[in-house]
Length: 469
Image 1: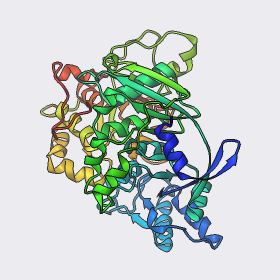
Image 2 (image 1 turned 135 degrees about the vertical axis):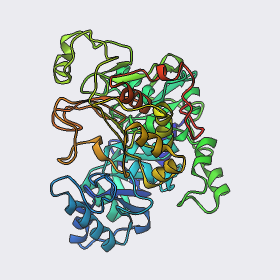
Image 3 (image 1 turned 60 degrees about the vertical axis):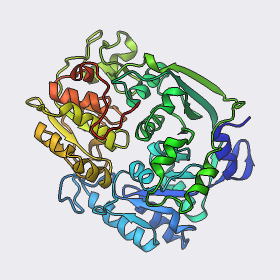
């Protein structure tokens, strides 16, 4: 009668504190330079030690520059101190640090899975709202604050209010040219940015089982925009094959897999809420407003109505205006949502042999040093740079504006990131979030474009031989 979430939650419950609150054991902790030094220094100031240092990892990702040859440079005013203080605090604490020029450096939610820091059945926390990304491997992963991070470091535990459960079942198959990002935006458009509030969301169904691991990360990542406590996908052969042989994968692999195989919701499991979606009905999506839930099919028109008036005004749009062919100023591919190798490879297949439109600034930021190296080994960097894209080092980059590099006021940007809030990518910047394919096609066209028109309806399999579906 238990869901996958129930199994993980109960397995880690040390004590039932009453009123739905439990003390949970925390298996892994990820820190980053924007808040990591704060938690580590505060802990040290109280004279407390980290209870399991080998289970704590710090990453430089949020405010590091992504320009080649960056070193400790950051365009964020005062940002260098965040980098140097986190480095010093991590070394003093004796934890693993993926420093700026470490070969394994990258975005937290990209490097943790690719190094097998997160594994099926584990609990993992990080002071970042998109930690739920890592639930795609069948882990219980959620975002926390700096004070909670300090508590988890000192005790290996956290107090957690048990959320309700929700299952989103996607039947059928996604159509050619439709990605996990489109599916996530479809869910948000249909059920709202608060649709998952107070719930642990499990994605299931034929369409989910058909997704590559990288696409599963994208889907779970966007559960944050749904308001969910966390997101999960039951681990399967796809998961196990993807994790095998990675840096922190278990040495006794077969024993580990046998322990992971039962991690799935029982046939008799009951969820507090169920949502059913026909995967074949999902279309390529793009946001039009200032919330990810304000999204529509790529060939749709801006909604009419007073409810969206403020978003339309900020975005410089008119009621009923089509988004297709809307001129853009910039295109950005990156972030913990869509910066993995298959994301880049599918975008490269679109730009191959083409040129970025005049007047459009186009940027590619790989999600990790490993992704960057693998992409370069395939020649993807050459395809992008020959087309007119900037090819960067790994990091969060212009997923968000923190006082450093940004796009300009009222510039219209098509972005593979997860948020389109006002000024998210720069003061006054107008962001449309979409799949890497849509971003690439729009960069080439100089206008919001349907990537399917670049491929004559053919499946968007990437250069690396992988696909979303």
